[in-house]
Length: 262
Length: 262
DNA sequence: ATATCACCTCACGTAACGTTAGGCGCAAGT
DNA sequence: ACTTGCGCCTAACGTTACGTGAGGTGATAT
Image 1: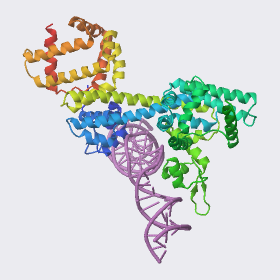
Image 2: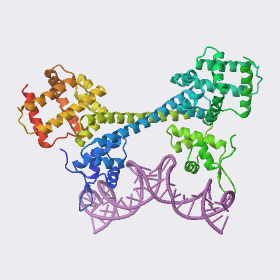
Image 3: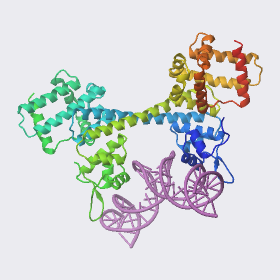
Image 4: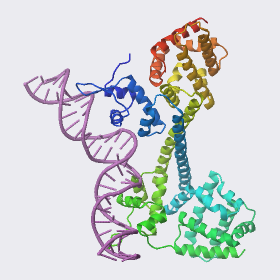
């Protein structure tokens, strides 16, 4: 047997909406229940339940109360309502995309921390940023790379990316460990060879010649030179390298010697 | 050439973060830039950029500033950070699920409005609620249906659901149009036959016998009788039928006559 | 001298409620 | 008769991450 009218607490229990929320909706002019003229207490009827029903549903679709107030007035649903729904759809889609990239980033980060128990936080954050700005990087990078290299870099699968990130991390760890040693130190050479292998593997090239060539192509053309500098500047903002100046200089030097020897 | 220090506006431009936000982060003790002791102006350095970097990244992962403040302090990332990330992951996953159901609901609704230009809003809202509470309905319905019927109803594809919803809508429209007519009126009979066909099609049964049987099985067992009543009560809260009492009574009557005749 | 800048510090507004805090009328227990 | 307690009421602050003025200061350009 359903009751004809409810007091707030009853109505709240019946509908599953908090008393405060009922008050608030009334305050915001979304509902207008009867009142007991003696006590001033609110009295809810079935019609109020239907109204509340509509409100909660539109809320669950992500609309704001102010929007709901506007569109709930009309009893018949016209094409206007369609437009609103479609707008809401694009908005929700955007929200979902943001969440998706955040989720992927977290998964990759967790993987990274899982493998290496000790990570300098700054570098980790830098990697995270890199993950999140992948799309922008993709755009920035396009004009200065050949299509081949570009697609090999950016169309990688999730696991490929994770592997690549881990290797990068290990590389920087090695640099920090070996910084200062002569460039012909066996461990240094091993590190550089490892780097070279990783690069070749990531870019899926057969040999170093090919690698060097693709970079040269763009590097030597004058018009691209400028683009390349812009690119470096942009990337510099995006990516933090976890090395001190000394370590960075040392790395530049040994890299130079290693690659020029070839 | 990168400058060594920035004033607020410079720093804001450099980092892409608004001045107000910089002020706010300082207010919330997330940053602590130097000050010009004469003028009191803020002076930002590279370290501040890195700090800000960390903040924006964690924000993009969906963390709140208060959380960021706690976890950004420690320089080394321990397993604690992992736990936080994983928590955040589940939270984001939940968010995404909510968005997904909202999106599917919107799509189904748009489809519905697309087909029928005129829909009574209350019924539409009711359908929307039904879409959103499908999972709960699934749970509620399980004990009172046979597995066959149950899975046929709830494991339907998106397009099947959309078709079903549209048919339901048309059915109620017909009821409203024909209400009051005698049960042997040809249009009424046509409507009921259509309903029967739709039911058989949706449930994928060969004939009416089978349909009647599955319902009887549960309907006649005493222990299930109680469950069934609970079920009806629950469903009554969830689903609004867009008929007046008269229409409803008329429908009950013609349904009775139609199905008892078989 | 004055207008313009760039900076500063309040401090209110936003969305959707949760959460006290203080007060009123009515019923039951002492 | 008195107190206690319940359910209701209103008012108003707290929350989050800033946006947006308002009003004041010192330095520079006209």
